[in-house]
Image (cartoon, rainbow, N blue to C red; front, side, top):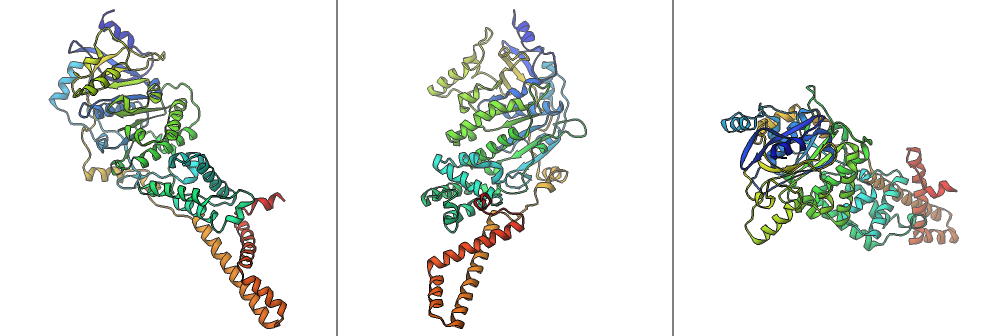
Length: 513
């Protein structure tokens, strides 16, 4: 078959699809020879790669627009801050019109429904999650703990669950851990086992490390609900949620923490869907190397597992980065759609890398892939998608369509207008600091100290009134360290009784009896 027959056959679809651009052969756009991607395969993940300035972001913009137009919600991780223009209509110019005339594809400017979000609450809906929602395993992976340290984290979660101590933010977790190695040590020794002070200190240092990257702004309430990422506007367009990450681009640990928690939450909350006619949500992670470069092996393993399984929930993930090698091979093998923009060969190492990249794509009789990778113009890419049958489509040199929305960022006044019209801002940007583990433990210790003081004063009063030598001995014992510990233990039992009245459970070992 000739080139046109191969492309037409390889990109023929039975169901709905989105248009990526037009095929290029021998340096010329082949009019009306359209390169498409089946809508039902967008849960099979994808890659958008290429050197700086080759058009990756605009390709991402085109795909996000097309998905939104088809009623598919989109989530964008905007590291560089240049995707907000999706909320404004593009401006028609001669260059765009000439390109689309050559492609044989209509172009019409359009704005899309956009929700601006943030991990810090600055210029966007504030995304948060509680420590409890992470769970002990995920929380340990984020802190890069070993098995022993992870066991202590599990103990903290178990103790908090048993005693109705909500772990909402990092302060809560630290308070419970510090309590268990100090005042609570005798209490937990029999039922839970002792905690090494050295191990606890290591965990606390790890928490301080992620706090330094701003994690205290991420952990807390109101916790974000995944359903708010799956919205359709009144025109039937999928809402494009843009998480603005410009203020944390130098904090990769926080970025990878957030990404893992988000993927885990999406996977846990969404039901199994099987093969849908269109995905429920498509996520784009710009500058994806920031996740993988800073992630521990445990974190990478968790990411790989979620990426493999999440497509059964109807969710697709696209990674945008400069080199395909930025993405681990185990993840790269899961990506069904690949859009490869130009690469630059300035050194011998660059040429070796380009040769390796060329081997990731289907073989073709029409191009010399290794050479073409360095010759692609801005807005051009080598494309292969997953067909409806689940096989890779032929590799095609493609002139990507121009975005219909603005190819620039919004002005501050426009950002304020988007936020003004937000349906989520009021829901999530009112910080809630309800009584949780930190406050409950502080109250418990104060009550115990107060009861201890009353017990001591009462004993001293009886000793003076009766003036009996034996009573003096009892008073001395109460004043001793052992006596104070006994009194504290009694006070704890009284406190637990009070907590039980308030709906908080007491000591589980007593319940068993």
